[in-house]
Length: 370
Picture 1 (cartoon, helix red, strand yellow):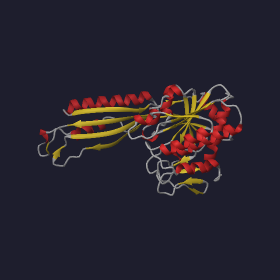
Picture 2: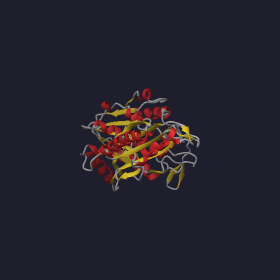
Picture 3: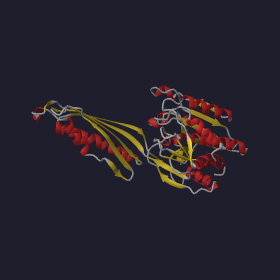
Picture 4: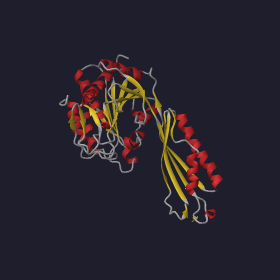
């Protein structure tokens, strides 16, 4: 399998230096490959909405002979430490040389879609309209899909190939995410006369001690990642800041936590006399696709054609499906065989990479049998 075309293409794309906001070379490559397959390819204007971005989302359409349409999505960018990647084989796996990431997140998804489209076309079998979205800036808060105009999408169901785990894993949900910001202004004074000041640090700690952190419930987690108060020890601190993210698979629970954060901060401001400002930014909502949906059933049928046993699970961190689903598209995530993503220990199972390309083709072909 090491010589399979999809493996060779993955290695080629991994060597194209790419990062969030710097997807130009890789986008040009996939645009060329899709055009050669007969797709009508466009690039949107997302880049002008993202500071420092060079590239928009790539959207491609292949007309079909059957009614209906199906969407396949993966992202072009990768996390930092993704320049100078030198993929190598380690047994039945692909890894980097240990100094960089491998970028299987999400080049395995990109490669699977390209390979699946080639397989589909070579089959000569009738298929529905095929839509492909290669998004940009996914790793920095789904920025590409946030600025993607979903009105161009005709598909009512789709697959985002951007999940760790072995092939066969179907993700029906992912958490929504909100950023929380706490900014406290007190009054500085000499530490020998604390009654003359108002400690911003003390007020900030009171706020954080009154709201949950860590595992809130089985669907919700919160991470207060830092508390910053750069004040010398002989001074009552006059300024303190803190930041967190809150994530939940239940949008109501996420909204409730954000509301509680604002309310606790307001109450603490009254008690301490400090000025406390709070802000929240909803990066993306949670999504959930029912197990009985056509989207899940189609993936299960296609996996069955490959003699693989599907598992339907809930995901954790968000991905492009969180935002695309707002357009009413049924979506699930599909695992493509990688693990250890975002680290120098990232690993991709070669057999799963090959199967992922076959899975994409089978989904397109099985669509007509729904």
